[in-house]
Image 1 (cartoon, helix red, strand yellow):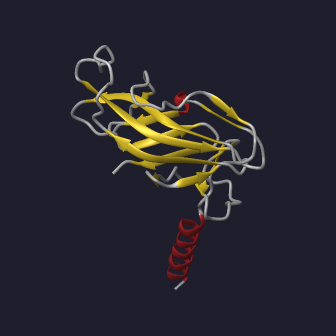
Image 2 (spheres, one colour):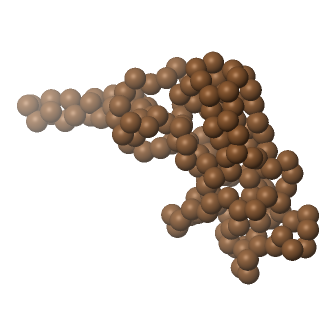
Length: 174
């Protein structure tokens, strides 16, 4: 009987933890929460759950980040802007907005694409306009929006877009 109680207790603990481990802290760096959900107070992280492309997420300063779309392949506007052999161009459409709690700096280098085998791709030359530029958003509600370009293997579609700034976030690509 004592063993059954242990199993039941362990099951309840696991169920409780799986339902409430929604922390978004990795070390000292905050990770995004959906903007329509209250912030978590836990400090335990199991893994970074992806949002979906289109989701707007909140930053630690009350601002927001949103990846609107992912497109692949994308034609370059000029013939000299071509992808490397075996690669195609891809873009994300991103918006960042400052919140009332402070400034938000954003640049194309703050975003990466994750491939299925675990590697990532960094931003490349801009091919779709308006391109996201490095900017410091200072005023509450101030926003910037633009495209970030990447080169990806022609026969592979990335699985996620990752923000590598505060907040860390991952948007699943469907």
